[in-house]
Each structure stands twice: as structure tokens, then as C-alpha cells.
Image 1: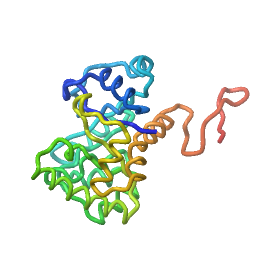
Image 2: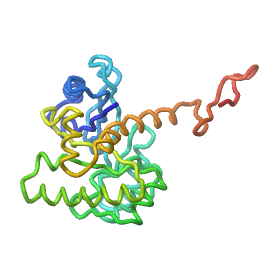
Image 3: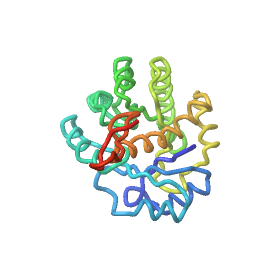
Length: 240
């Protein structure tokens, strides 16, 4: 299973439907639409999924100047978005994200002024926050920026592996032309020092997150492993 996390029009140049078509042709099982809050017109994930035979996951990437604003945005989006990510380009935002169980993904943790250490890595593991391995800069940035991105990715991988932190993998495409087939993403990750299994697992993890969160939003969900079922007489009951 492989999912591509994309930034669609108007934040990117390609529509959700165009991303879905290309991702399907590339061999992906699904796409996660992760535009920053408020930057995406209404669209019908179910209709697009049916037309292109690919899962379309409604997501958001929260970007905020401080943790208090980020917390408000996460709360606003948690009820109606399947996957909620936080754009991490600042140490305080990174800390907020990994300490907040309502956050699914800390995106771009090493971008700009962002950084990670062992304390934040352990917090991410304990709170179930996935760290994003963003390989996009390796194919889109120029030499100097590409080197800095590679250094950040290697530090991220060392911390992720040392503390067994789950991860997602993306190229953060803003155009369908930026998409690469899963096998190409694996090859790119290997060239950056990641093992193939890590990249494959990271591409699949978007799908695992979507499935988990959809289950939790189901009215029958009580807690992991426990679901409410209809009982005799009053239409309610508990079961596993």
C-alpha cells in the first residue's frame, strides 16, 4: 500500500482530480489532500475516488506562528479532517506538535528553523505523532539547499530510528508532474541514506492513519478493539 500526500490547487497548480488520476496511473492506492487550512475549495472525495479508483483522504496541514494558535487550528480541523498535520518549521511549533495527541503528523520537522532532539523524538513516539520524511527538497531544491535538506533528513532518521518513532514519507508535490511512482520514491530515499523498508512503510503509513481515524470517527467506535453494536430491545449495546 502506498499513499501520496499532495498540495492541490489553489495552493498547488493541479486539482485534486488531476492528482488522483496521475497517482492512480503511478500505482498509488490513495492520495492525502493536505493543503494548509482554508486554501482548498469544496470537493467531493468520494466522487473523485470512484472516478479514478483511488482512495482520496481529506487532510489539512496547520501552519501557525505560535503554539496557542496552532492548538486552536488543530481543534477546529480535527472533527472534519481525516488527517491533521502541523507544519513544523520552528522549535516551539515542533514541540507543540509532538506533545499533542490530536496531531497525526509533524510535517517538515527540519525545515527552516525547525529541529528535533531526543526529547521531542520520544514525545512523538509516546503521543503517536508521525514524523514526516519529506524527500521533496532533494528533487526540487538547488545544490546548497539540497545539501542542507539532506543533512536534516539524516539527523531525522538517526533520531527516528533510535527512538522507534513512526514516520510518513512524502515528496510534498504541488503539481501532478512532481509525483513519482512508489518505486522511484524508494530509490530516492535509498540515495539519501534510508533503507527501502523505511520508505515503503512511510508511504503506507498515510493509509494506516486514514483507516484508523475513519474507524475512530465511526459512531460505533468506543475505543481500540471495542465497538458498539445493536443490542436487543433498545437498539444499543456494547461488543468487541
